[in-house]
Image (spheres, rainbow, N blue to C red):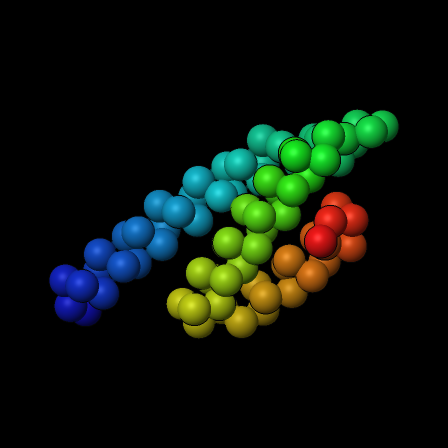
Length: 76
């Protein structure tokens, strides 16, 4: 693996870790009677970002995550 590839993978892993951490911390928002829209939007953005970058690294099943989360979060 080239240095450039290694750096790209390290960046992906760092960003994926941050997005997963955010998803873990704020998934409890979904249990609120009336979650704040900005929290739901941030959850959706994190899921979409994680999905897109994962797919670009060869994990195409991750593309299902934003579609499923849009239904769950009821955002557009």
